[in-house]
Image (cartoon, rainbow, N blue to C red):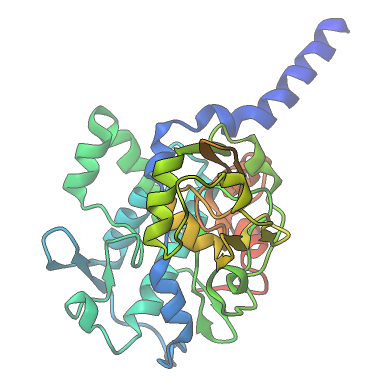
Length: 335
């Protein structure tokens, strides 16, 4: 009986820590997706309504940001390449299916916009700071090396299982934002980009706090801090005690810094995050005479699906549709 109880406890602990063990350095390549472009897209007057009837266009044209050239591939190949770029392939199959549907939905949404002049007339860019990542088959071979056949087989099987499925809200393609790790609570689109989207609201994602990359610390010397703040239009005297120029931050319930006064100038958390290359806008700032320290939670903007949280949910038994419905409230999966 004693051995039986020990086995049960071991299995329970394994279920909890499995996502932590699987999180290798590969997550550092998981992009903070749909970041700068998403703000302009939510303000656009372009229609993103789903066309009536069946979708017959079965190719995606990708603007390759490095070569400045367009590449046209099948929708299937595009989804394979975007999932490979955006989520570690050691993640659970159900999380990867959710990622595949999110990537496919984003491609359909952007493909339906008429103004594509900023990406050479393509449907979507492979730049994750603009739209979302994409890796060609050759780039996948280079990335995975000896594991290529294993991961490519897993990838193609997953994408085939959800092929053609996308997310919609009131007959419009969803803007499927996602990021690597949230604070334990996802952020609303309104708090990050200033635009309300009913399916991009704050939800719990408690598994994220188990990530070994959940917290990060960035420390800057006095001279470094003063120099960076100067670029933000804030002048600080070198003789000033830095503790005296940093005001109290206003944060959301997810921990995102909405605004913070530094030397009486109000800045957004996103402005500070970008200026200091922090992993997220959810941070606590402390200062003394000689340095400033940011203690950061999460990795990415925190809006929409948390990739680590999706993997955690999958390992607790959630299916891809349950994951998507959790992170994109009120959205429907269609095909």
